[in-house]
Length: 416
Image (tube, rainbow, N blue to C red; front, top):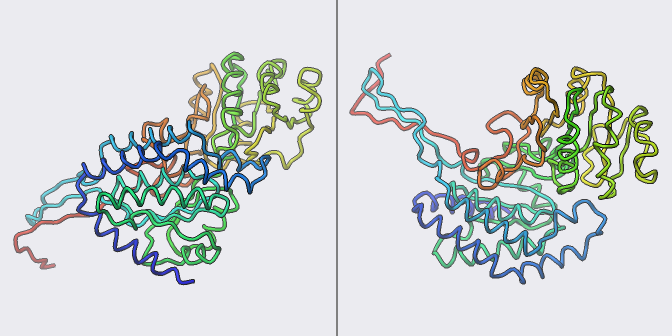
């Protein structure tokens, strides 16, 4: 199958978006949100076709599943994005040079933004809303697991774009075949940036094989360190929320680090996790501290493989450390540089943690569940970047722009 036409049409659509008035952009986003809610039954029916092909025990099942509540939340996020100020055209710098040239540095769209992702139909809405608001074309490459859901969502988006007379290729959905992935990775000259969202395996594959510039997002191996001075009541609530709020997302807690002087509080810190049947993989010291206090069928001895694992399920590792430096060493070794947290009442320890931990989001006395574009006031997110070039952390509207220099003269020529 020939995929070049998909990319060519996307580039053509990119030019057409350049002159689209802001009020029309916002009206389209609101219309898509309202249509999504109105077509909830249709979206759920198509989503069920995908769910019926996946094992309920698969960690991706929860990510794949749409509900009326989730569709309403998605619509609310889109309306929120519509109401936000666009970064396009923002003047970052202005100057008049000695030559008389008037210089401006202004924000512009990246161009054609492609996202390759797995079983997350909500990403289809999020990517479209953020890209459309910033004048970018989105080229979507969803996985076969969400094939029916993504087709339904893009069909809905296309219907609204058509009603407003906007090129429907502003949202381009590639076929699910592997050959389409290969074509996307080689779409030099068509796609400006490629963003993989999903497992570490997917991210690694895209990074290693893409000829298109890549922004890495997603994989989260998340730690929370309970310090010697930590407040047990705060700690219990934070750990419970970070681990159980939604286990299939990348900001959920994978490994609890605990200061050895606080092992007597460990059962209090993690006891409520048993309500959610969370399996705990504890090192020897932590295991002995929990034995008899945590359900035997949920308590296991940890092995090396449990540290540095993104569980995406009701599982969590526990590591005992002798102090802050050892916690920092462990995080430096195993972190994916996504989200890390410390629970402490020691201001000096908090500042050291904030300064020395190398991650996109670093917390003091708060749940890592907050690493999210909407929670950060960005409206929504196209992904959470774990790298340092161009963008880091939740990527919202501003992160989907670049800039260009505008120079106005009056006949100047360069003589030297």
